[in-house]
Length: 103
Image 1 (cartoon, rainbow, N blue to C red):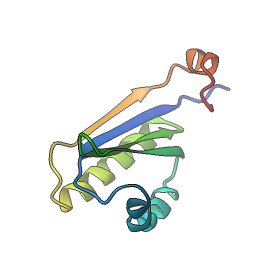
Image 2: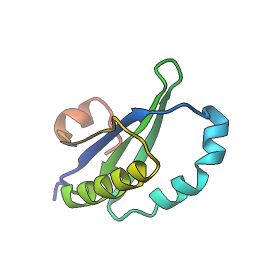
Image 3: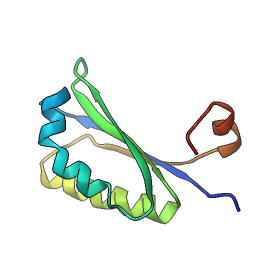
């Protein structure tokens, strides 16, 4: 049976810290995210030049992706963050496997 993977992409403004400092400051958040039902993996992104961070998340199904999107949007809004991009995409598994996606 083929899994219907869903990709969730977050991107938003951020003033720092970056790199190892961000990793230290966000370790608890990363540990919390790692327990999300349906999460396969997350890649954390940062761009110091544009002052934006985010993440690319792979979920087992649409419901899990939407549930996490709503939870994380609420968390980011509580922190006062604005201009948050959050989009869910279906994964084309056949093409993704050709290009070595880890699915």
